[in-house]
Length: 251
Ligand code: PGA
Image 1: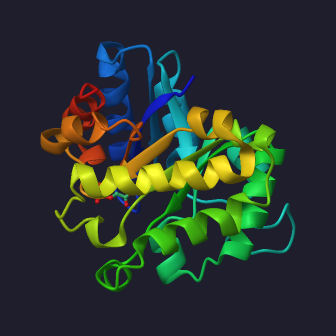
Image 2: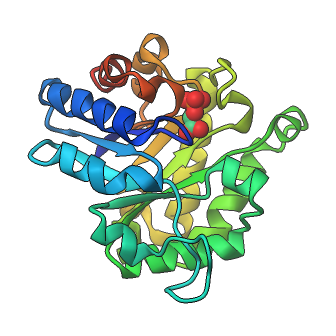
């Protein structure tokens, strides 16, 4: 039984009061979204406690955008998985291309982060995706399969129950250039095959795989209609409650 998810990655946007307002607006409309679609918002760390409060009683789950690769201690500026849980998170995004590109996040670090997130009871939204050069060189399948294996082949079928994958082609993020439904679908199917090879057909079938990269109300329907696309990780369009909800109504 695969779960549909629409998750909003707010990135480094909104002040705390603006974020609380946005969360309240999303929570107020969340009832319109069908019960089989889970809504998730991922505000900056500073907002988590206040946004958790704003989401209370709604069906919207709270996610962080990252977590530390150590359990606790002398790691100035880092936020540990158990801190996220204590702030009200049930998810964390990990391995977003902006983390990989600007903050040197490697697959090895991601393995540690996923381990700690799962050990502390967080669900993980693990991001994978090729950049423009890789796509133009025809390496997109290899890159995405490679990233998926490098992290997830360190985990078990049981762990996979708490892991969601987000395919986000780097060239489509924040560029207005969405992957076509066909381009996204063929990569999603490839990811599912990579999962099937290691964990078996049932785990592959049950894993939620999201698309991300300039997903908006006008293109969500076509993307979500694909057999292997189970929702979206939404950046820009998640900063407007109406657009975010409209996307979630696109199944
Ligand atoms: P975008 O970002 O929707 O603004 O392209 C998606 C993401 O990076 O998660």
